[in-house]
Image (cartoon, rainbow, N blue to C red):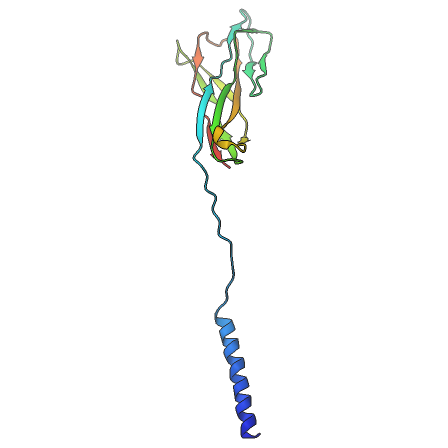
Length: 172
């Protein structure tokens, strides 16, 4: 092999070694970085829940009568051992935040306490939507309703029952 061929051969070998070594010691890739900034949520109670007045039947032993109002404002008073009268209404709330965002709603059941005898309680089983979506004008707010029902029996104590209905909303 001539000197000229040897120099050329060594140059080619060194190029191959250098580029192979450089390729194995570094690499790069591109990723997208993003963030969504949301306005704080504002929740306002607009209207309280009211099941009206309920008259219990006298005499006899009975149970399992439900009185309630659905979140779509359908009132029910069934079972034959009660009579219902007076104005009824769902609870209403208005939530505002960032446009076009889905919100999760949570509303646990409520213990209603008898005002004259705090040892007597009823459980209001809450009927609330699982979620709502803010509109294009989310800062104006979206209204949603919450209903619920109670179960009565012949030994339910008379009196006014009340409790606190606590609703929470979170971005989904």
